[in-house]
Image (cartoon, rainbow, N blue to C red; front, top):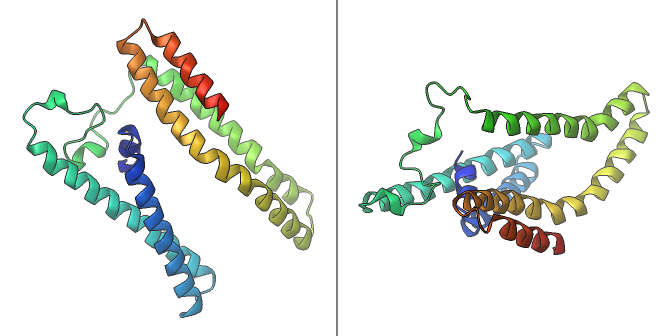
Length: 195
């Protein structure tokens, strides 16, 4: 939840710093566990455990600092829409049923798209298992597939994440100013397509 709130607050510099520190710690722990302790595959698991802990700790410190700053603010309307005032606000609340059709319809659409994406992404593995390919052929296919997709992942993942945030913020702004909504959306679409 803290990651989502940081995205909503458009805190990209903090997120970049936290991710960089977590990746460096993950790499150091993985190499240390593999070389010094000879843990082999378990070394990767320990690397990801420390990666997750680093992200949890850094985001927690960032929001704890934000909480102390908010106590000095007298007017709550000065704070942003995505501000939280305690860690308890990130926990599920009582009576969390979705009663708004405005939220349920896009959520159902996203769920269907996610399931389709899952079947498209994992479908080749099902086919490989169904045809009982030799392990050597499976390994060659996995290496070629993963190396080929690395470039696309590195190029398009940051653009995708920023686009989600920008379009969400633009939607919030558009609700406040219905007059300029069409112009703003077309400007952002043109800019994102040129990327």
